[in-house]
Length: 365
Image (cartoon, rainbow, N blue to C red):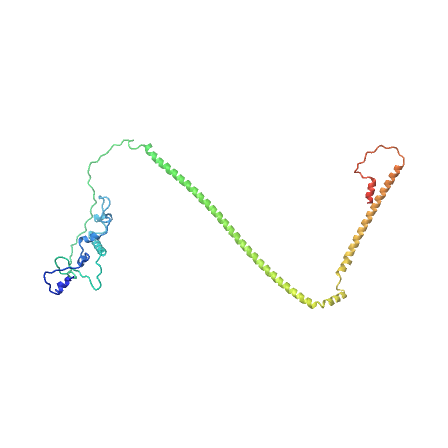
């Protein structure tokens, strides 16, 4: 059974109890007291503060201890009072963050509410709000602290010197050799880089030339295809125009044929009478008769005359030849019948030479 301390201290006991005063309360989480929440102990924030690196703290100065630090010397952009105020604000912010991160008590059960209760051995009067008072303090005006002078360590020890003779510290051939090696290496490397760059530029120019040739070929092919398309379009238009003309001509021919059939049907009965009248008046002539009488017959007479003249001439020539041959043979026969001194044998004639009888037979034929 839990008893409210406020009800005991303010309202008084509800009933008289026998024996010594006893008090018991239900267990609950630690730091549930409102006073402890308003003023936590010194170790409360430190115990819940997150881990941080000390080198990230602005109060830690890195570098040489002999050098002047603007924050430490006081010649920075803010005074000591401003730094203290900033430190207090940071502390309050850390406390508020720690209070927000601290786990609170669980919510009360339905129909109940939380109330702060003391668990110390001695009772104290609790107030919802503490005693407050306003106090004003005026501080004296002081001049800002002067800048801390730069620390200069005191000189200690004694100066010393060393005599160095010519040739003790520097050997020209030995010292210049690595420098020359570096210079020659750098020069060779630069030369190789320039040669590689020139080769790369030449390769790029070759690629550009090939690309230009390919682009020109594509452009020419595109132009050829465009010209071919235009030519095919013109050819199609011409074919369409020709088809339309042929269709119009066919329609006109059909109309003419139909008209001719109609005219032939109407004029068939009048044509014989008209032709007979024209022939009787002498306007119509027979073309075949005219051609035979005026052209064929004169040509035929001329040709027959020429043929007869050639036949007569050939016959006269053959007659003269036959007469000459017969006279020659008669003379030969007369010479063979009359006696004559023996003549020397004549050379045998060649078998290919024609005899007079053979010549006569050929002529007769």
